Amino acid sequence: MSPNAKPIRRLLLPTGALLGAALVGIQFIHPPLENPPVTGDFQAPVAVKSIVQRACYDCHSNQTKLRWFDQVAPVYWQVTDHVKQGRVGLNFSTWQSLPPADQKAKLWESVNQILAGAMPLSEYTLAHPEAKISAQEVAVLKQYVASLAKNPAADTAKLNDADRQYRHWQPGAAKPAAVPVAPNGIAYLPDYKNWQAISTTERFDNGTMRVIFGNDVAIKAIREKHINPWPNGTAFAKVAWDQLADAEGNVRPGAFKQVEYMLKDDHQYAATKGWGWARFKTPKLVPYGKDALFTTECIRCHQPQKNNDFVFTQPLSH
Amino acid sequence: MKAPTIALGALLALSACTQNQVPAGQLNEAASLPPSFNFSKLGLRVLSTFVNRRQATTATLYGNDLARQAALGSPGATQPGEVLALLTWQQQPDPNWFGARIPGALQSLELLRTRPASAGQPVVSYQCFVGKNLVLKADTLHQHARIAYLLAQKPAVLP
Image 1: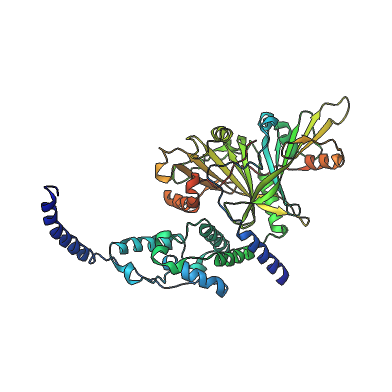
Image 2: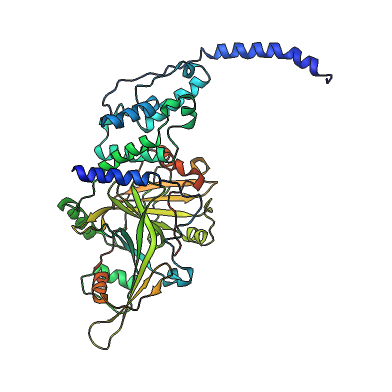
């Protein structure tokens, strides 16, 4: 129709041939994906383990089974990348090397990732529909992790821990010689104690209780209901303590575990989803993380809340 | 051992359908205080937090500087000018985290103030506001027990 139609058709064949040749060519770029030995496999009741094996093991174990279509580049490149990242975050083949508390935390986090629809990855289940987890199977997983949560009355060790900490804690007095700084450069902010509480959480998955504080910017945003996204300058501090329960079921805060910060600045922290992340553990406020890459852990856990500016807390106004 | 497991299973099966993400950008309205109460104007700081497993409630204790100093001191160190406030909510499952409970319906706000007395111990006044709108409760039953409870609480460690 148009005067250009003919030259385009004339170009079609060589372009197609070139693309075909390229597709064949890239098959030779095939970095190997090894299955390292299984050193301590995940143990759980059969009903639980079979779901986990079927839905998670391709990316979260050393027993990855690639189908033929996974092996075709460029899909193969993405698949190997997913598997490598998946194993770093969670590997059921080296499960026994994790301390029991970390194992439990990983399982609760995994169930929450599934509940939020973040896992298994939708691009994975698109090609591997057999990895999808049904509502019934989710219930099995929930029941299993719930059976791992035990919140007994506090024992002497826990009570002693709390007492010792309380005796050594002199608010306003003993300040650390230098302000602790997380590996990504974020310093501990002592002022969080003067911020307002925006919520509390009882975590029966790990036996802690928490208060979430918000600074003035956060409180103003809550009052004006402008919290998605949160404005730059917003700061949250989440404090966690051991639960100390008595025989009547009254629970109070025991030993201080940690304070965690989220500081909003979509320019300064653009590389980490617009938030600066930090965690300081024990009353000595020991910075968490070996290097600045610790934030990948924060982001991975908060990822299911990406439509909520990565914030789990649903704030209340005072 | 078996019965609690089955009960837990049944409970989870019931709650399975209610697992929903909170719509993005929303406040926890049920737990929020009426703006007219102006709680933040009291200028109090968080002292501690509590859970009652039997009643499925959660509470946050607030105090001014004097109340904090007194709570840190030895029992009976009450002085005039203290303000303590205890907010209590019914708990609800955290819709964003299976494994957590957060404040649900606002249940009460208890407010304690100490005033100078002509002789001896300071005078303690106690008020209890209840419900979503924090209406002042006329009933004074259990007031003495509540005053004793509030004055006995230690602050949580906040380094």
